[in-house]
Length: 439
Image (cartoon, rainbow, N blue to C red; front, side, top):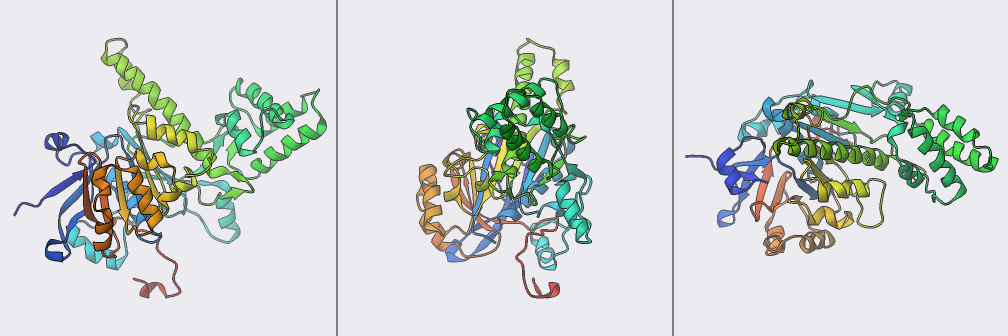
């Protein structure tokens, strides 16, 4: 008997042409014939075209796990596809380092035969970036934190408006005006250090000393975090064929200063500019207005980018804004053409910006029962999703990995059981039981 295959995020005509090429195997389709639970046929996800996806569900129902499954799909792609793609994982809980470690969970390994997979790791394809402060803290506790590179961002990459928002300063205030003048002048010369900032502040002769000292104090507080430097990292976060795990779980907040959002803002803003430039050059070459050879030479420098964000409501809230709100909204609303994709996970869709739900062409929902969250999904999506949603939720049993997939491309609602991961999932619940008794 020929096994059925469902490909989500891909039109019927494209599916007929490509089949499962450029897809991630995510699990099995689920139905309830005669009221009995049944898994049949494989489920795939298109990951070579631009998408805006949302993964939702209560705490502990498998959101981060599903993000890991999707990430593995990028690592499994053939080189001719993967070399044109770069995956950046915004890790807010420090759970994606284990993409480098094959799965050793016995209960999950037992399930793998049903999904025709086996444990595997991708050590060479995954790059872990962590802040220097996290490394120092681990060493103080007598531990070594695994990483491939220290997360360092050049000061020149931060725009004036981002500093103002981070410090909650009005540009018309004396401190805000001084900051704007100092940073604008320094950015004209390229890279600069904290010492350059302090020197430039001191050189502002007609500014009151109290204003100078206030601004210096703000930057001194940021300097102590060891995130920013004159040159930044040697390598880029974006590299064709690579998965970059940007672990910002150790940053949290510095008082009212949300550094995680600043880092996401910088990355999202810069990639929008780069991909838009490349797409323009590519289109001009296709129209005979530029050199095609020049386009091919920068393909590796400007790969299509997928950004995966765990706890996305922290960066794109339904109420108020963060530093990353506008750059992420640009990805959601304008990213399709330049080739920027966003996959967001949240346990509170009602706390997520409405545009993130409305513009999502696919939603993977794990065990959604809260009325406010269900209403948020219903109000945002098309009629095919609204009709019968309550009934589907009522019939859906609690089974880890079981999810509803709402696919705009196919205009269908389909139930799916997410497959076990090839790699180890470290985002398991804390337990007082000894390790050998937890699963």
